[in-house]
Amino acid sequence: MDKIEKFKTMEKILREIEDLKNSETAVIKKIGQIETENMNVNVQNLDKSLNEIYDGVYKNLQNVENLQNEFTETVADFKEKNKITEEMLMELRE
Image (cartoon, rainbow, N blue to C red; front, side):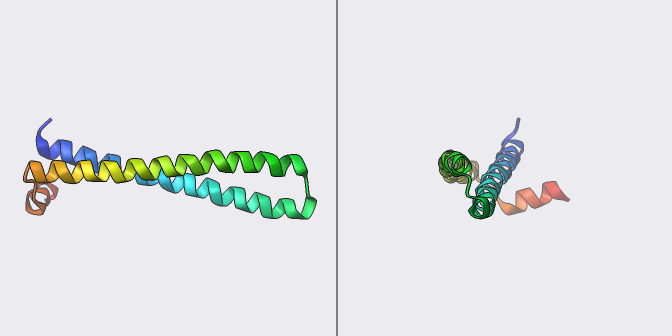
């Protein structure tokens, strides 16, 4: 795999990590919606379970954000080290 193809694959991975982050965020929002609805019915077991799930999902979101930050730096370093320019990438897209 040449350096341009490798870089393009790394960018694709970054987009997939962003999708993962968005998915985790959506789960957190859904938990909030369920908690709001539970205020009307006040089921204690549901409340307890949702809190446990929220804690796990929130930790996952933090892990994904850390991964995203670290991998973004890795991609930037790779781009700089291999002197990949926007012009090089534009030529490939045409």
